Amino acid sequence: MKIKISLFSLLLLSLLLATSFIQPTMAGSGFCAGKCKDRCSKAGVADRCLKYCGICCEQCKCVPSGTYGNKHECPCYRDKRSPKGKPKCP
Image (cartoon, rainbow, N blue to C red):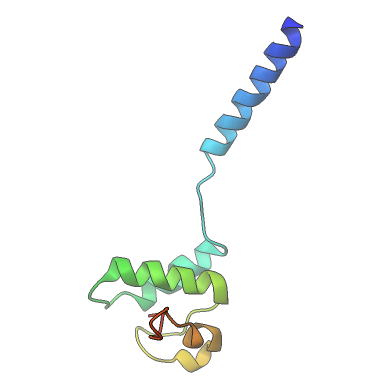
């Protein structure tokens, strides 16, 4: 009985340690992070731009080139709207 508890405790501890090293990331985060960094490089509110660009990139799997415009390159990104009807993606 004591061996089972020790084994269970060891397994639980190793699982907790393993998950503490895994960072929460977006799908395709390397792709999205690089593309959004370029897209938001000239934004006045860069942290907000990066947040929404990351959300859009995760969902659409693409980011238009350049720092502004070119949304025709990614229709999903172009067509996302906020609840108020304004474009969601920078």
